[in-house]
Length: 266
Image 1 (cartoon, rainbow, N blue to C red):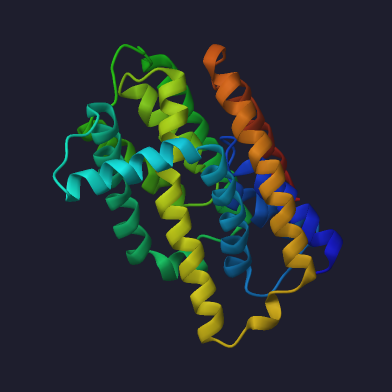
Image 2: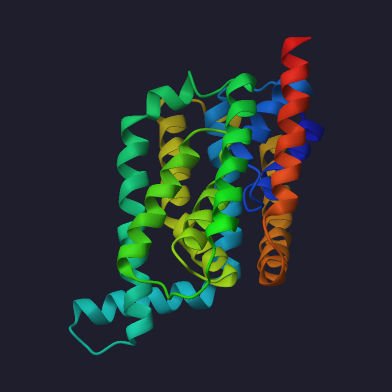
């Protein structure tokens, strides 16, 4: 991977990690269609995920500090804000399904799940999920621990490239009655522990396999591009979803799926 390829992959990661269009799916398509092939593809994806999760950490640093404070107060058995307590337990409950599924499907994710054909199919299926979420959205409930767990089940769908982590969790939130802003905000916060853990695990695997040569200038540039673009996308999506539906992303995903299927068939 050269510097130009690294920057392109970083921009794609930053744009698609938070927009409900699937970052892993776009990275697979970019490599196949644009010829941006790299060794240790899943490990490179994990490094890029660390860049975007750093963007989440900085953008939501106040929320994350409140969660850390709530956790400490719980351990010390001190009184804490009820909303912070609910959010903390909702994130913990929502992380468990993806953590278990990720460990069980790790080998499959590295092999079977990395094809353009599968991405095209899941782009379509994800669009159906978005459409259902829009039809069922009532926006009349608040976040609860039970809802956090159920949204976590939706997050497991994103283990398949093309589904979209943000898209599946935002859709889950809308189906369960959260407002658009609540669903989007919880989606970002819920992504923090699972993506952080995934990225760190892959970095440890790189060290264990003595593949440190992958940590070079092109990957650094890719990391920087993903971080900067990711920050902009978080800000954009939070503002956009206040007054807009997921329909524009449904159209984009269906159009991209059609292009990919034509590319694969012909």
